[in-house]
Length: 484
Image (cartoon, rainbow, N blue to C red; front, side):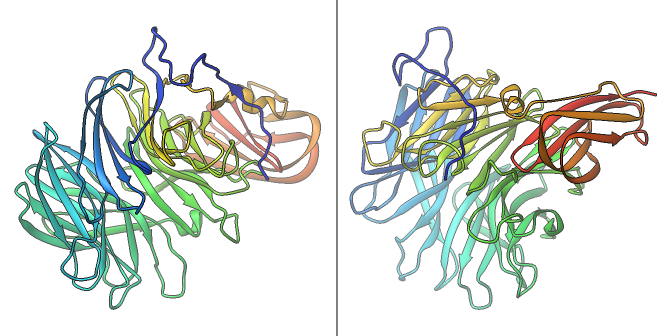
């Protein structure tokens, strides 16, 4: 059952009307039965490249590419239709060309193969190449460029020895196959994202089955494209059964997002943000595990904006109007909650990708049944950094509103003891103390039904700290100044 939480509902006079004083919008695109958005890039200020898939009644997916302006207007559009399935999963912007990758059944065998397609800036197809392993289902899920070389992350399902095998294929700019690097030949692994932060190293995320009798757990790692050395890191003790859908480089290391079943026994999941240092060592994690998030919630993409804050995009079953709703979640660099928003209809809605735009806004791309002309449409929503959305079906809650759900106060500043007072008694599970750099300093278990908590903070050095108070019904946030 959906949980009732306090929302600020932003209303507009017309669902798709664009206000003159800003360029925030929520729009849908698609001319056929089912349409889904899978990729986005800002190629110039307020010029957005959006990648999607469209299908007709027989569900034969083919790529569709849009160039959108500052109000979401379509400047250019191209449909790459074929009698075969060519389902796009990822988008890369190169020099004077665009590249997409995905999965196709246009094969001489009965297997699905991965594909890569090059498109010029006028949206003309330059070439397309199918590739993969013989008699194996191959799907390209991510694409990235390093110089004049192209690297494609591919998952191969039901291989001879593994349930799924993750590989990185290398191509020239002309589509010539150059190399293939396997992430692991001994363990099943599924790749979700591939990025390049240097000329010699690729960074990836996904999940891996570390032991034959174990479940999959989130992984993040690096590939040296010269030595072909692969380094994989996992965080099973923190995340348990989980998957890392996406990551971004931050000012202090990496931020990873995904889904975990740490606190669930069955199909429900929690979204999480994992903070790592430059060596990919654990720093801090935030899991949406309170009672409000009691159904399936997934964090699919994460980006750091110009101010250092983190924006997450995904889907939620715990809140909203439909089966799943688009979920946008904003945090500080230390994974400190700022605001969250949902967008959705009474059916299925989800965000797949999000970017930070040059005008300090956010642009999310996904799919929706929200007032579109078809069964499912591509959704593009441009959101301000202060949670302004242009849709009457958008719901936003800020940090102030979230804390107002359960009223509390506490002593501040603190020399030794911090006294936390609640207006009513609640079951308090734990209080986490986080430093201003986002590092977890201490976890203090409480496990008591009370209206007052006394914390001994005398062991802390002077400075600013964040308090995360976990109760049986919510997670509360506060700041405290420790003085001598």
